[in-house]
View 1 (tube, helix red, strand yellow):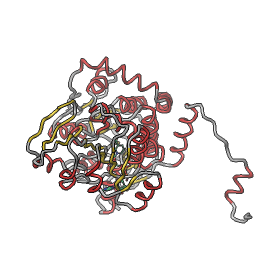
View 2 (cartoon, rainbow, N blue to C red; view 1 turned 180 degrees about the horizontal axis):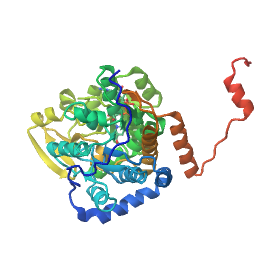
View 3 (cartoon, rainbow, N blue to C red; view 1 turned 135 degrees about the vertical axis):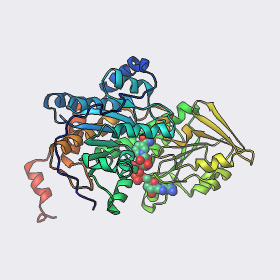
View 4 (cartoon, helix red, strand yellow; view 1 turned 120 degrees about the horizontal axis):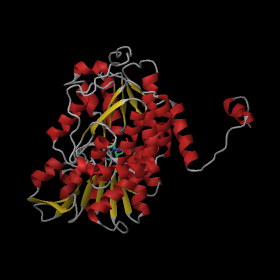
Length: 437
Ligand SMILES: NC(=O)c1ccc[n+]([C@@H]2O[C@H](COP(=O)([O-])OP(=O)(O)OC[C@H]3O[C@@H](n4cnc5c(N)ncnc54)[C@H](O)[C@@H]3O)[C@@H](O)[C@H]2O)c1
């Protein structure tokens, strides 16, 4: 285990400590962004309820909360809730292509949240935005992919002790953090929000499932019915993508490296095979593994002319874009919005969506608000938990089960669904081992 973070102290305000107030594309977009944020808010009843309670109880008062998340309407509503809870909130993007510029503008101009995010920013700007957030000395950080935490362990080592907890939103981030914990390198406590059931069971499956198909359709307009869709990885995201593609009439092939997941896919009724075999027949390829080079040189060569390639995993490493760029005879960018054509030396053309970055965010608007309601309600309540509780040791922590149950119960109530409760007799029966046949 890494060092135990310092005892929690209430932070002094360091608002704007030498940092710029924002870096967004165009503040003139703010009114449009506000409208869309409020539209999403209508579909986020759990988070709204938390925001209302937070504004009365101020559980985050005095905290400086630095968030590195996809800058979308739904994220804006999370940030509003955290601000309502008394925190000084500032944010940057967790992916250069996922920022919605109108939302970034509205966060600054309408909601007073310093924001550093520009759609399609280059790598240097992306990192300067992460630094802008850390230069404001957060006491709590929020990541989607562990980029802030990573900087806090390298370039910003000296600031790490000011951060008494961090939250992690996605599978890839949690994997990185668990690896740090295993190497005794993790210096701050991190809450694995992704691992809460109220997050990955719904967001990764239904959210990524629907929005990935949405991204493919928006970018290409292709008819899914009758297409052969190859899904790389049958985890939470992969299951959602495969089931939604099948729902639209695709013939779905799954590739896996884990025998249990591969078996599950087969029993769910999907064809399962090696990627090299799928490469020869697929029309549309989607990766969602968290792994690198799931689509690589040998696959590109085997693919049919006109194959469409995209990725829904966190980093843009699942498709070996460096090789493809090198190997291509020529590349035509934006043959349709967000579609690049790679002309290979074998005479075939492959189409890559959203530069191999998260297709649901690069080519569509990310997850529907209804599902982000649960993920972000879990984020908000986990922030309250770390702010109000004892200082946690520097390791990866799970979200307490009470928070998950609370989020699920409020979501059910908002959907008008009532469920049974255990009678005293049933509870006793389920807890006893004596009674059998
Ligand atoms: N697009 C989004 O909005 C979004 C949302 C949530 C998570 N994610 C990201 O999607 C990725 C997957 O998340 P998840 O929750 O489904 O993870 P998961 O761990 O549940 O599933 C990943 C699956 O991929 C398989 N896999 C690994 N390497 C493979 C390979 N080379 N070929 C085939 N299969 C392979 C694993 O065996 C596993 O079953 C992560 O990077 C995560 O951060 C994206």
